[in-house]
Length: 171
Image (cartoon, rainbow, N blue to C red; front, side):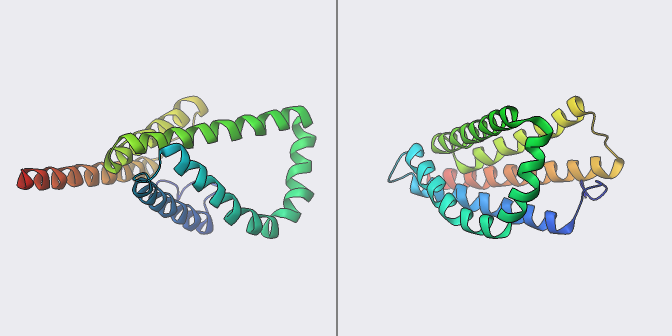
């Protein structure tokens, strides 16, 4: 609902985004379980290696020829080789650091707390894009965003109450 009015909205993109969300949720669950045998840095290293092995072949097969022919050459022509390489390096570095910090945080907190942190991060990103980039908020976009945030917040609250009741019964 929040993105239906965007000019670049497509159902294919939406479905892929939902698959990505589900995949990252399972990654967090299984990462937390794996942390009983190893620390978060090792878990993240294994996840990164597995992701590389799984993602590179289909990416090269599906996107490789078009990426080299259009995307890479166009990007370099637009900004120059030095800026392209430095920006690519910085994006990779910051994305790696973000994921490393997220995995380290997951080791130290409960998955529910981690999920609530993700909600707060999304609220910050939405607010940042509105303030810095001047993204306009239509009524539909605002309602959709509020529903999404309220839904996750409500889920987090209910989940916390259930966990609290379980602990009270066990004590």
